[in-house]
Length: 262
Image (cartoon, rainbow, N blue to C red; front, top):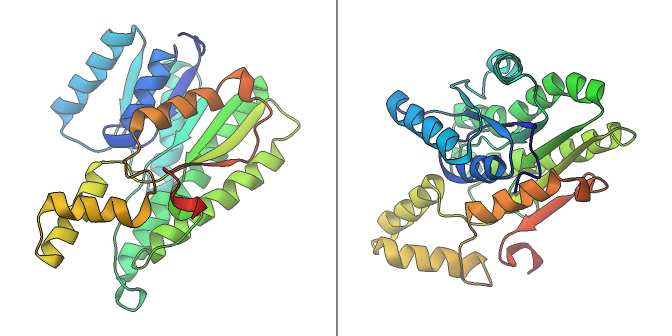
């Protein structure tokens, strides 16, 4: 507990799913937190207040659209204004769309690349100067098992996530002589709204129950036969932000139940 006290963490895409789980773990470890994402204003404010009350930390919120470079830069500036600085940046925001590549809508490709890859570039570029000035910072990019392997109908998502790993390695090299680290985590399958939609689509396409579609999806990819959890990803983020991980640089860490070792 409180291993990261007096640090400020910004987690993109953190109003639900993996991002919210990461934000909770960082708050529990002692950080102040900047939440970011879409959602009903009243619901998001309730979330923000509950997180602050539960962990006794400052919690701010921004609705910045991560597909917009100017809004990404303003997000870093807002967090710095409201919470004092950005010590930890977790690039988690992501969207998904599936289709065979010859039918893939151009606008969906552009949106996925902008949100899942380009946003990481813009946020890292904006935050690095202050991290370098303090000679301390932690950048954690949430990639995917699809950063390491591919699946049919996921050309844009796999391309973006593979790009995240390349970006992570370059930033790690460029910061190697500083107190700033950059690493990536590659989750496998976590039951988020995004994954639930894929399960629902599978069930509708094959005319089977959602429960059966979920079983088939897990069996197809994951040797352990179990979903991973947002809390497991959050715990790894906390480790990567600790002093114990000071020499972990440019890593792409799978948390995928054995998916990518097959």
